[in-house]
Length: 204
Image (cartoon, rainbow, N blue to C red; front, top):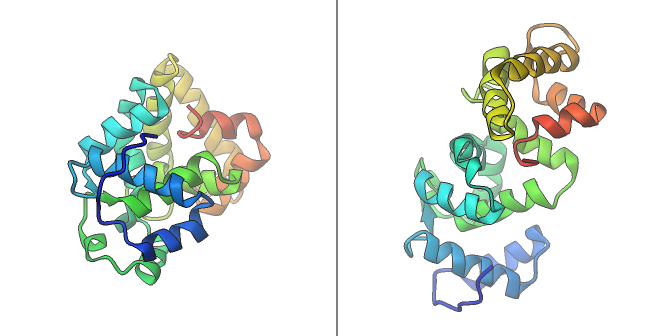
């Protein structure tokens, strides 16, 4: 991350909380914040377009532009009750009520969870990427849409995406009700490392 030390809105309380939850040092947190602050046009809140630019730069893969809308949705606390309750409990920021943007704290914690955390945590966020209509279930249509994007990024065909969709739904749907719960999705990814790695949008 950049080393610029701009004056922003990150309070000592914010830093204290992030030190406990992120596993990063204070210097790392402030460096991350300074860059996020600049990339968000000094608003400390990113919209989808800003996030797309920032995320693809961090991952050093411009092809990820094809899936950043879905990753943004997974990072957005307005679409994750559990994460939103966590943020309200500790931060109490008014702008968590604003849909369509993410702030620094939720970005940093989500980014760390999808890059440096346990496989279970990564697949927890991956589930949110697949759960397009936010009903806490993944159906075949949603799976196919995300796998189509992943296959395009990896240079594979729509036919490959179709095969992977059929395989994933068949392998992970333990109760055969044609939808995947978060538990089924995470357990499936953990037990089938090859399919889990391929299906993880944060692994690209």
